[in-house]
Length: 111
Length: 114
Image (tube, rainbow over all chains, first blue to last red; front, side, top):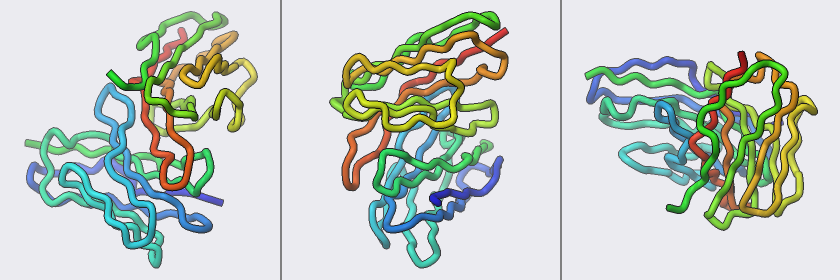
C-alpha cells in the first residue's frame, strides 16, 4: 500500500541553522509528492511539491527533491528563522482522490 | 478573498448533543474533504466528495454524516457527540487530475466535547 514516513519531532534549532526533515515513501507507480506546513492555530498550506522523479520543489527558501531511487523527499532549508516554527507534513498522492499524509514533524526555532 | 472557509471556528458542547460544521470553497474546485486532527497533530481523512458524490468514506462512526448540497459546500453533522470526538476538524478542497490534487485547507474547527 501507499505510506509516508517522516522523522519524529520535535526538532529544535537555533536561528540561521540548517534544517533537514527526512521523508520516505512507499507507493506504486509515480506519485506526486508534497510538503505542507501548519502554523500554530491555522490550517495546512502547501509549501512545495514535485510531480516526477528528479523534480525539485522550492518555496520560501525551502527545497525538496523527488528521489525515486531512494523513495525520498527530504525537506531542507539553509537558514531557518523563528517564523519557520510550525508543523511540517510530507504527503503523497498516487493519482487518485486520496492524499496520504505523514505524521507531521514539529519544528521549534529559537532566537 | 478566494479561500476555504469553515464555521464555526470553535465549538464547545456537551456529550450527547448534535452539532454541525459548515464548509465552503470559492476556488472552483470539484473535490472536498473532511479531516480530523488529534492532539498529536495526526491527520486522518474522514470523507471526500467529488462533484457532490461521496468517493471516500473511511472507517468513521455513522454518527458522522457529511452532506454536499453543491460542489462548493461540504457540511459535517455529528450526532450524539462523545468525548473522543474532541479534535480539530479541517475541511479541504482540490481540483482532481494529473499533477494536481494539491489541497487547500480551511482554518479548522476546534470541537471540545465536555
